[in-house]
Structures are given as structure tokens and as C-alpha cells.
Image 1 (tube, rainbow, N blue to C red):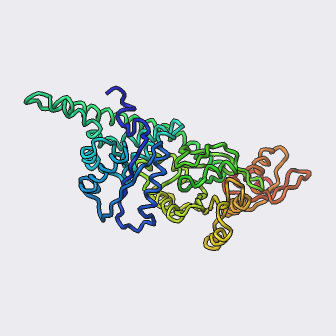
Image 2: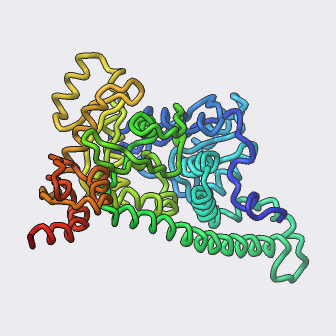
Length: 436
């Protein structure tokens, strides 16, 4: 094998031009119709660079064990692919290795991939940081490992030509070599990610110890999290009308109206049927969500599937054990709603905040809600800070809510509202004040 890192787990060599989508309606009450599922799959295909030329659907309660859709439907897929000159068939569910192998045998003139492979390809295209690239490579390798036999089916002829009485042919030896190389690379990636995640963990603990409130933006992909981050902090994060346009977590400082400082972290967007391998691979990034003091759940108010997308995000949050954190619901893109629809939304979700990251609508209201949430677990105290302790006055301005500030002959008299960790840093001057 010429290049382990690229050929071994490659799913799509070059972005295919023409794709046929295959969806199965199993009458599940998920909030997603087969049409909506396939519409999202088409957006995913478009993000990966493919153009959808046709779709095939099959209604069944449970998938066929051999080909997922049954032999008769496979024949229809082959015919429709030929008619539309499609060179790629994308299934909207994850195929087992045996199902994919059987489909590749019966559809020899097209490449067959599933939803998971497509999402992995998109992640590979969009990962920019070293950590993101390592995470995607790990997820792709773990996905491809049980499918290596199908990837190297062209070696079967060599295996058959291995010689009469030979226990292993050349093809089988190559397959075992590929598997060993894949497992070795997986081990290397896990070690590298462990090192990188330690650095990220140190950063998180540093922010936690500083007493700064940590806020994580969560939401369905393309809900506008990056737009809101940019609007609030001038972060300059890429904003593009594509699924998974940004993957890497970005943390920026946000100054609240009363002067208090918090951090705002944009995280990878979620999606319906997000591959478990990606959830595992992006664990260190998703830790930002689990350990945040507040989650801002961003929802695209203009999307007809907003309710189903909201449920999909809650499902992933449950997978990473992040559902117990304080959360604020934020409806974005409200500028795209008609007045009557916006009124109904506010009436049905009175505790949510309606904003538009693109126009700035409602952002002041959002900041007020964040300030109120930041104040919930804080204590109010007063302290006289000697003029020789100017660093504490600076700390008060950066990390606390100053209720009043007065300069006296002995020092700066402050009435503050701050977290317990920040209040503890004023303990020494509070004790001195009490002693007097």
C-alpha cells in the first residue's frame, strides 16, 4: 500500500459529480419524514461537492440483512443510476460492512457509501486545526477498519492465485497488513489526541479556576452559532451557508454590559443521526459543552424542522452527558419570520430569546439574559480595597458586577456581586477590614 494515511481509509477519492440518494421509510415517529431526511441528505451531498440527480425510497419496517433495501430495490437503484449517469449512491442510514460489500457487488459501476461515510468526508474537508484533523482521521479509520475487505476486493484475484495448497494468498496477506497498519495508526492517533486533549483540559481548568463564567454555544449545524459568536465578540469565525462549515471549537472573551467578563465557546454543530464515532472522536471538544456553566442552545427559527432539530441536539447532549447543565434557548434568524410567526414563537416559548445574529436584532436582550443568569449563583459583599491592592480593583472590574464604587481616604470601597471563586480572592482584604 503506497500511502497508509490516505488510501487506507479513503471514502471518496474526488468529490463525485452525480449522486443518487437512497432512503428507507420505516414508519418511525422521529419527527422527520422521509422527504425531510432526504432533503437534509441532499444538503450534505452538496456540502461534500456532489450534485444529486435522483432519489429512490423504500418503505419497510426493518432493513434487509443483505442489502438493506432488498434485491428488487437494488435492481431499481442500478437502473436509475444508469439512466441518470450517476457514479455515486448514498444511503441515508449506516450500512453494515456486509451490506456495503453486497451492494458493491450488485452495483459494480457506482461507488456506494452511507450517511456516516458522507459526514466523515465533510468533516475531513472542513477540519482545520491539528486536533480537528486528528479527530476526523481517527473516526474515519475506525469506520473503515471493519470494511477493509470491501475496499481491497480487487486483491481477491491475487488471493485466488496464491498457489495450490497455500494457506494464505497474496491478497489475504495484504488485507492483514492493511488491518495491522490501520490498528497501529488508530493507536498513534489516540495517543496524539490524548496529548492534545490534556492541553485543552488545562485551558478549561484555567478558565474554571479564574472564576470566569464559561458559556458554550450548542445547536444544530447551520443554526447560526458562528454568526452569533461573531456578532457578540467580533471573533471573525468562518460563516457559510453549508452544513458543518466550522468544526473546531473557538473561545472568545465577551464583556457583558455591566463590565463583567465571560467566555463564549462555539462548538461543532450537531445533526440528526450523528455518527457515534464522531461523538467519541470529538470528545475533548465536546467536553467544552459538558463543563460549561451555561449552554446557549441556538435554534434556526426559520427552519421548518426547528422542533425536530431541537430534539436531535438534546439527544446528542444526552449521549455526552451534558443535559444537566443550565441552558438558555435562543431562536436565531428571527428576522426571517413574518410578524405573526414571530409573535406565535414568543408566545409558545416565553423563556426563549429571539435574535438575529446577522442583523443584530435581539442581541442586547440576549446579553441581559446572560447577565441575569451569571448573577444567579453569585454572592453580594462589600469590601474596602487598599490603594496598594490595585490588582483587586482591576479584578472587580473584569470578573464581577460592581454595584457601587467609592474612593475614600483609606482605599476603594466596593459593593460587588461575584462568584464564590472570585469572592474568595477578596478574603484577605475583607479580613483586614473586619479586624479594624
